[in-house]
Length: 273
Length: 273
Image 1: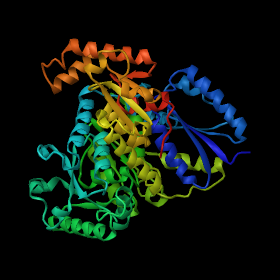
Image 2: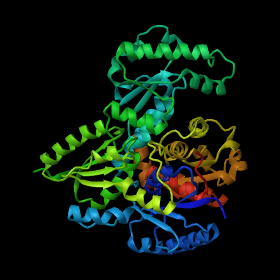
Image 3: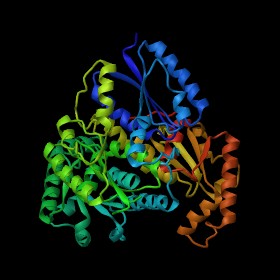
Image 4: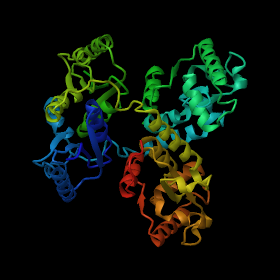
């Protein structure tokens, strides 16, 4: 008998919603071992039947009822997954009836709007935000900074680039970033070029130990990666943030999602698409 | 009386899960006008009480009960949001009891694991995937292509860059991309440099009209953007894909999420973090 329990996240579109809530629920049972599989684009009764057979076989093999999380909109497709030997968690059906009653309106049962392309204009805005963030990565391009929604500053390897890309992709935010170099840090004042944009700045800081570790992977035994240098750079960057009243957060124990949503929240930025 | 109904997505962490499922449900009622607000990091009873007062005021103002979607783990924090004048949709509570019974185990009630940093090693892998994708964007760097999980090819502006970044950020996939230039397209065979990696290729194509529109925004009235040229490039790229049996999809009516999850599915790639 296997030690794991199988868990399926099934969707008629990308699977992002079913996976997101499913993972959230499963993390509450972290002593158990789950074998996870996401199955997107289950949008016909036929596909659902084929999948149902496969899941039934897994149930027999495991001698443990698999968990089946679904967010499928079409009732007939959903019905084909209503197996006797699984634990079914149906995100759509559970809530939609309640909402229909409360809102006094039937669900339109249209598939795929949540992560689909809503309209081309909004979509273009999002792509432009990605391009803006790419072009303004690592202080490469300093003009057009007035078009930025936010400018992240911090020492090298404090997490600026992935955060900017996430902000652009997930929220349509034009996020530039500027790396504070050792020269910039010699003085506690912001680099002159950035002064006009003080109100858009957001600082990232990081625990010097973690920074030392990250930089050592990149350039072992360098001055750049040395513990002393990391400690000094982080101290000076934080002094600079405080000197100018630039809000800042530590990225040390945070995922990209957490850093990005904290910035959205603290800088009072709104989703742009 | 306002025409909109207020909808709150409330979370003790990033708000991504509550927002994701909440949006999915609301798109089913698309003739209604919702005023949406995401409130992340509601992780104390005090914060929940302050928020509850604000939501109550909104309910009075709107003369319509607000929708409150929550995924809060802590029962006391959740309790503070149990208002009489809202429609409460509690993603966590609704399912967690059922799961506890089925799995024969109590939920650990730990907050913030779903989008938190699970462990540093996995996190570093994700950041490396982002760096890899940045370094291998637009055919900039052709060595190390053997380390890529997937290589996207397609004509200029077919959607390669945002898709690669999304694959890296969301799934930890090392996604390189290579733009097919007019010179590459003169022959129906893949550029020589790419031949050894044929099995990792995935093609992106796009409707010539949409491509013409996108390119015209960038370089109006250029040969690059002309309808004739767009049609020719797309035809030649698709011939190349067919010639080599490279799988490909059209990005025309797809969001980045849909393109990325389709590639994950069709190329049988698994999440890497």
